[in-house]
Amino acid sequence: MSQQRLPTRAPEPEPLVLVVDDDRRVRELLEIAFSAHGFKVITAADGEEAIRRSHGDRPDLVILDVRLPKRSGLEVCEMLRHEADDPSVPIILVSAAAEAETRLQGFSRGADDYLVKPFSPRELLARAKRLLARSQEQRAARRRLSEVERELTRANEESRRAHLDAEQAQKLSDLAVRLGSDLHRIHDLDALARRLALKVQEQLEAESVVLLTREPGGSLTPRATVGAEFERALGLAVRPESELSLLLHGLGRPVYRHALDRLPELEADLRPFVAGRFDLLAPVRGDSGLEAVIVVEEHHLGAEFARERVAGLEALCGVAALALANATREAARARGLLELVPDRAAPSPAQLEVAGLVMRAARTAGLAPRTGALIERAVALAPWALGARGATTLARLGVHDATGFVPDLVALCALVKAQASGPAEDGARTDEGAVALVLAGLEIAAARAAGLDLTHAVAQVLHESPTLPVSLRRALDRALEGAPEDVAITPVRKV
Image (cartoon, rainbow, N blue to C red; front, side, top):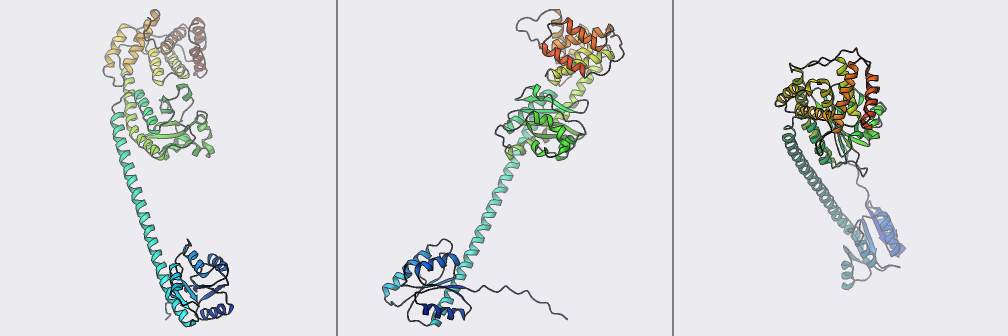
């Protein structure tokens, strides 16, 4: 039966003794005596050499003659006591002088012991072993004290971090409660989008923020901007099922664009964000995918935003998801109200085509998505919505619309009707861009009903409307470039 061998402790290293004496015979004698008892010995013949050997070899014990060339033993003793690395190295002074005054000087300079020549090597060895034992105990105590201090420092640091984490968690919780109560009271999707963008700008102290929300086609496109012109954000989009969309939904937290630049499959999706100098993307995840993406302009100093501010943004995204989903449902409900009106005529395919054209033109011209939707509905519901009966019906529907979309449609139709009757009075609210696009859309729809295709209908209206702003003329041209093929013309029914 084999016996299990117990692990053996590593042998203790041999203590290193520095012997300093100008007498070669004394150095040799002490070297022999200490070596015979398991010590390693190094020697020096003068005070300067003693200091060099002490600094270089770090002895465990110094035996030091008082009378030395270059520097006395008392000077060397005092210098070693002021050594930063090991000021407590045991020092035994040896001297032929037995006077009490010399002994006192030695002890006052920091010596641990004093031996008068001639002395017995055995006595010196005994005193050296006693001092080494005491020194080792002191060093072990200092090590334990140092370990305790390190542990205490580590515990204090962990306690401080835990306290800071608890404070941060409480701040995020308070932020979520405040934002939740604020955002969930807003039922209008556009007002909510702007409010959310303002909250993000405030949270990050950012230059500009863009909020992308889901459109009926599925892509996330700009709905609200803060600190930047809407035209600057027009090129931004996150396509459904794109690599960028899947990655943002999977991450579920804010991510810096420059961290995604190294992924070649995202290059095309990120190109508009690079061109617009937007560097932080924060996904707002809903039950069925991304509800929105918050896009933040890169920091004006080129540095990343503070970590606690980004953590607040992440909490904000979590709160915003439900609010945006609710507002989206309310917006769909408001659109649905318009489909339930029994006394309106259904728009023809050609009228719907023109309505889609002017909505694209509104987006191209930099008008807000809500304004584009209002223009599209006004053209699609004309001429019924511009008549007295339609206006009355829409006003009644508006009472039940929490989003304010239907009341805004009533107001836009009233402005269009007034503008068609004559120029607006001084100081009157005209919403010139929206009104001009609705009027242009009505004229294009009339030209389509008269038999012109879409391209010639637009050209005729642009030719006959020289006062139409240049920006809207260009927007109509660009919207026409992206229009679908002409559909069969069906005359618009009169109401």
